[in-house]
Length: 356
Image (cartoon, rainbow, N blue to C red; front, side, top):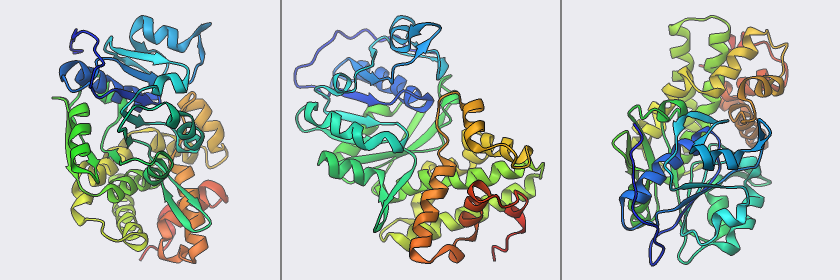
């Protein structure tokens, strides 16, 4: 049930929140931000959401969202608080923000950061809800590091077992915020925490972020199992193998990641829900069911209707790093998901590849 908040608009000395992204997960998150902006005096009442402008039934999507208080294209079952305002201009959406949340496909992020930086408010801080990783000639680039370095500010990370369509109807779930600055971690927790959305805090931004990115590769493998009509035993084995490689990858490329992070919502819980629901599993199931005769690009357009598939892209980026480091053999599951997705390996090889 959507709560009705009516605190008057006010800007003096308050934290001003902006959401960059309006897909189903970004829209699900901004519902919470709008509620809490109205609930807590520390926040300015208005929350702006950047929306890439599209035409829906001949009308601009932002116009429809602001009129109906609903993102009719990407989260039609999730009514928005009236203090959430959809804005088609990126700089205008971010103008004056002191808390900026990014929830957009990571391949579009770099130019966005450059656009918002000059217009942000004083003492700004950021949070990434972007699920993916990047790479350069040296290896892995975390999305939070990209934001942190380009904006020059403290950056927290939010990941968890959060399927947007379930969040839209306020079904109870948990999430994890990884922080470096404890004060900012608490502030972002205040901005997101809700009776239907329990926020846990972990002083481990890297572990939280890598769990959120890598589990999408495992979900592709789980989807292959579903498309091949394999049962629960097989899927459970794939999830276990995938979790083991997630943990190994984290510890191979980074130090200081806490073992307990894998037991938070961002870890095993997100892995489970993503392997049983969500877009990555669903698209991989369709790929396997078609015997690999449909491309992922075609499936993405057909099933996701404008949203982006992250699991295959993350598999490609991870494989780039593994090849660069000569470590494909150490991560046979991640490598096989890549080979099925991009090199035409048989889908059945998801279970015939030796993982031990």
